[in-house]
Image 1 (cartoon, one colour):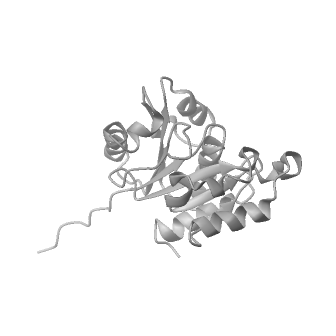
Image 2: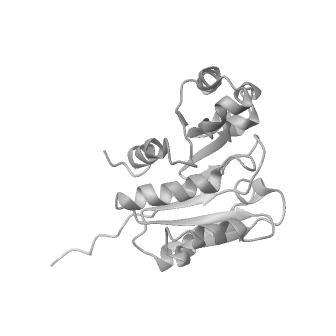
Length: 210
């Protein structure tokens, strides 16, 4: 008697948080392109306060089937629906898995928030926090929970360093110090620089592909 067919493991759920304007949506778009090219079957959830603006941007990008992009309206403080009560995001992720049963990965972009923003482990298996150099090289020294606790810290907009008077080397050293040496990667999502390193990290640490 033959055994039951193998069931595909649930899709990994990866959170992407960070302050307004740090480049979360740009990183999502770059990761869609990079990971899809590697054969990763993925979907996206975006969070906004009272609109679907980020979801519509991703849907219009041409990078992904628009049906694979879900929108959640937080309606209040952005971190409420990713931390205190992530029910809406969990339901959106469950719905995507029902509609696209081959999914490997779901990217969940938080609405823009402050340095205290974190993701519930009930919602995500892994989460990244995005800051940008224009916010100042003192961000790591402020030791916000988002910076300290995330699985991967992404420092974006490296191209702006000459224009904002930031010491990037010091910023990265201080970020690694407050994070106890845990991963910190640098990107310029506008040009796609550093995105492959983020995709490599997700493949290795989340999808367990060498």
